[in-house]
Length: 588
Image 1 (cartoon, rainbow, N blue to C red):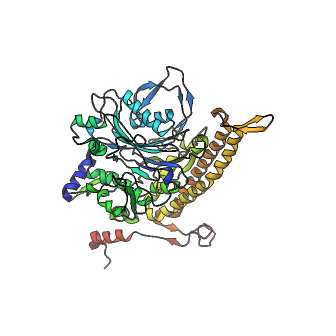
Image 2: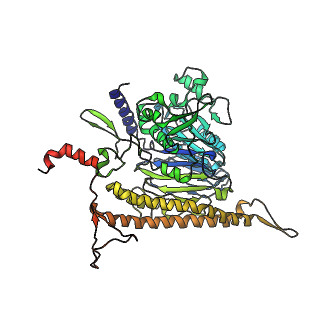
Image 3: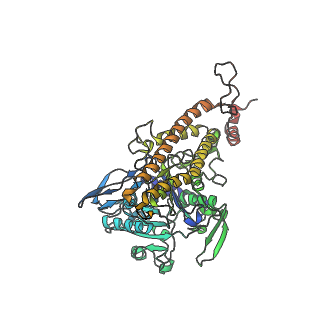
């Protein structure tokens, strides 16, 4: 396809998405298996990106329900009541996208074939599938079964979705889409990420061909292929069937706006070299740049693998920092053109596409984005009991300018700054993490290359300190856990057994208090940080500080700043302005 046609096709795809109102088509997930992680945990990261989503931490305590109880289902995107379904007799505690059994579920929306989006009487949207399943399932495989059962029983009311699902042992990626008018439920396929490997997806279905007789590593709807045949979308051998090519046909927009983010995550975590198993099981290594034309929407034949082996063991901080990526160091680096303004801003306000002089152009869509509601890195840590092992590193707003703080999923309560109802998209709350992170982010957007290093330093200092601290907190919690498990025996002193859930109150109180205390501490620190940014960088000036961090004054005792620096603009900006406006502003 010629470049001009490719650009037009790309733009048309995005315009269609915008017209359909798919605000949810903007999320990124990174999936890490036990064997790929530095500490043996399974991890999933998620940026819930939407211009309408308010960042807060959903908290549902475990509960027992009377027979006949009903659960109201609200559409996660719109808030509208969809209907109600029978409540389970017992529901598990959930904190955000994790539950007390260390189950993690995240998503990205890929849309797919529009004719499959509508389903009469459907109740379960993708958000409800996630949060209801978290309350009812204990493992990744059980979660897959629950998702399918809920969608097939009550109807599926969303577009195509990719789910990331993990427990303490396994990590799965699941692509699904509705059956369209006249049919209830979903067609789907789920693949287990091989241990030692990682996966990523970002609003494009990524499962292509898959093993048809390997239930340990691949599960799928019985009619996933037959349904496609009935629709006239596939006519080859079953072994040749590709889910993503059939149900979410690739276009340039999907490559440039979506697959590029998965490519970038792999590029970072693999240090530029993709190691993977080919269709015959042979281990191959290919430079990441080989797939760059695909990521840039220019060559669909260069699709990169679904699973890759990272170049090193991955820790929580590695995953968190991937979620802060703006394609730095690649041809798509958002700081390296005039669109970044005079201060290398790696953001472009929406819409993503614009026309100039009869040509259409696209701005990049990076992993880190201004419209994030909340984001997290969830850890399922199987060497610890569930009450301690389930750990949700949670944050709000733009991942690049916001912090993650550890929230133990066993907590009896959540921090006030993350509480549902503490502000919303139309009402400011001075006590909300979402709003203070937006204040810090929007401060940085004014003079990014000058101000962001200050914020990033604070983020790194906080996260590294907490990640170093967690093993000690775990150890203290295990001591309390063991004391809860000690059973007095007259003759032999005491013996240990697995404590019942109702015996674990002291563990929950300890870890809950820690979670709330640390979230409150970094929230207060961010309030002070926003004030500091205003004072230090006001009006494009940068006030100098001494080795103790104190502002340097002129010595008069009147707090008049001295040694003010005016950093000006990037060289790119200067050259473009000189070229475009030099006849007017040149000094002669």
